[in-house]
Image 1 (cartoon, rainbow, N blue to C red):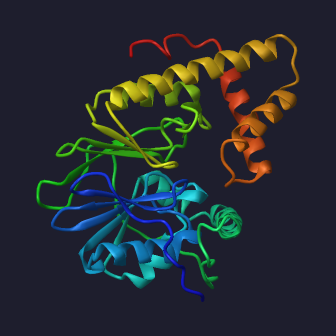
Image 2 (spheres, rainbow, N blue to C red; image 1 turned 180 degrees about the vertical axis):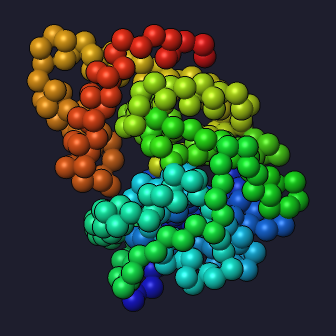
Length: 311
């Protein structure tokens, strides 16, 4: 396999927290006395992430965990390559992720998505090689984590696990109090920093998605680390409040347009084009499916009250 030339440099956000991978597919590195990767990444960044770790001079024997935020296909791609290679490293994930990652259909869909993303990254010049094909893609969770658990890396770096749902049933967040870093996965939607706009992602449940943001607002973070487009510095509560307002506006727009007689498929197509005008990493078909799903979730919870109050 060709060796990836590291174009994208690791980013140091704090003394103990670094960003690896690509801007749209970041993987976070937390350093205490031991180390941990947060997010399972995508296979197309395999060589890049390994090069970035080498550039930081980190002994991989210090890495204790790869901690997932959730088990969607674009967030687990490094795992079947790195865990067998780094035999001392444990995969940490939620109980729901354990179930999903045993499902053959989930694995099949993951492989298809991971290959698509790898080809896209190569075509965009962000990486120069695709990951090797494996005879078997395995995701063996070595540490099951859930609400209230802590991943302690020593040196005062301790990550609290927070269960959040709404985006997916397996989604968890992490909060590190020492430096005030809140890792939210996709729990606050897809944020486009260039235009300061959100695409909400309440694919499981709008009501649960909003409740999770209320839960995350209890943490007084100094930055929010997202599953896409990296870190947003500043008060985490203000960012979450902004995301909830954007979610309310999107939901109200979906309900109003459908009640006024617009074709849901036409509305979803419009939103798909808008999303893909702001990033170029996912397929049109999958994005359109997600846009249609959001309309259904809005319709299901259209009569629920209090979802957006309180922040």
